[in-house]
Length: 315
Ligand SMILES: C[S@@+](CC[C@H](N)C(=O)[O-])C[C@H]1O[C@@H](n2cnc3c(N)ncnc32)[C@H](O)[C@@H]1O
Image (tube, rainbow, N blue to C red; front, side, top):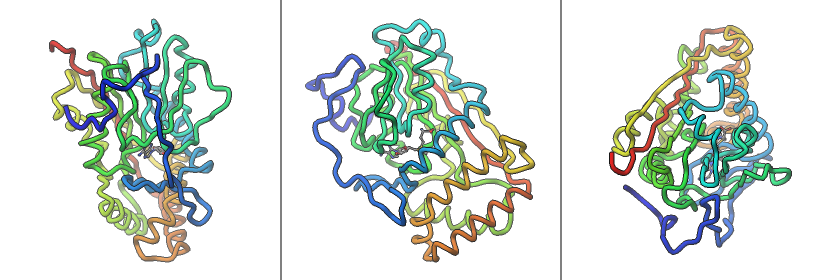
């Protein structure tokens, strides 16, 4: 089925959450650049900051998604989660501060929720009894038992993952930990907007090069249904999308979306400016102009959702 990377060895002991205790702590995980905290991992190309400012953006992102998708998930798994039970489990990969998990855990108190992230921006206090947050670099494999999860969720991380690692390591790991008949759900946005203004187009061309250099496919979100089908592991694959008009023209939701993009671009200030060989102040001027162009123009942003059911063993 793909790469297991040691996480699925039958020698390991798993707790009732399906989680294996991690032996070693991650070393040299962060670096500070111009006052922002970034990942510093040998095998990761993730470029957004992982600090409190980014956690705030992530919380806004959560509220934004809830509104545009009219809820927290689309996979038809509500009944299973409502019924709950000792072995009903949900995993969020790259959970950030954990807003999705914490809300879901309240709705479904009889389900076990596990959030995984390498950057510990999730809360460590007052966590509901049915939630576990785990510090883990997903590129080292998931410390999760085979076929233990009813629902595996992932939102807004492909913009920071190398395409090959995503397809050849992360997706096979997500599939490995799913129960047969379990559901997977991806929610990802394009890294570029459409109908951009002149300066935004120039900036987008630079960002495209920056992502390509890191092996990141900024438009992978729209390919997710095809990627899922190609694994041969899913019976049903569903797709949905939203086109958001950014800025004033898009009303309140357009303003929120534009703010999420703008704050994300500010977060990429140091690595992107360094790659483009421009001064950070020049990059600032470009992002400010992007904001103005999007406020006045017709810029739109496409966001994609793909959800699929893992085949039953005998299917
Ligand atoms: C933009 S945030 C999205 C957070 C959350 N899923 C949401 O929708 O609000 C992406 C998250 O992926 C995490 N991430 C990136 N690379 C990772 C890795 N190799 N292992 C674990 N988490 C990773 C980052 O730390 C960050 O919290």
